[in-house]
Amino acid sequence: MTAIDPSEAKRKKSASIPKYVLDAFNELIVANLKDGIAEVGQEEAIDLIMKKAPAGTTRNSLFDRNYLDVEEAFEAAGWKVEYDKPGYCEEGEASFTFRAKRVKRRSSR
Image (spheres, rainbow, N blue to C red):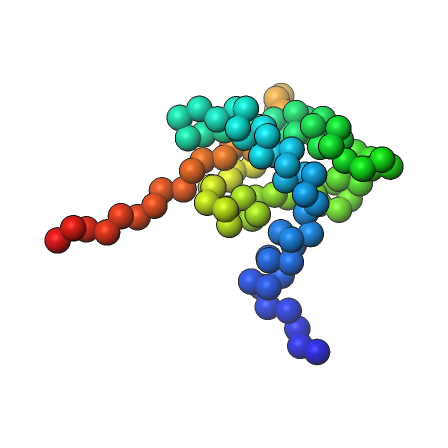
């Protein structure tokens, strides 16, 4: 057995996120998409994930298992994802911003 390399670790981590979590984010991206950008509130995502999750899933288990760390999975699918969480003593809700990555076009020269 050999040590895991960073790219393999990233692939395995993304693959460990359950389908119901990805489905919830997909639904919210579509619902909130405007001009190529979708803002998804963390609480909005958790609420929908919990509705789609199997019986016995708890809110704490989403955090314990890092199921909200969806950035790499969506970036691999072509999104640029930013997670923003208010700092200490700041108000507001944590959120995810999904932006379509720009595709580099070849010059026609």
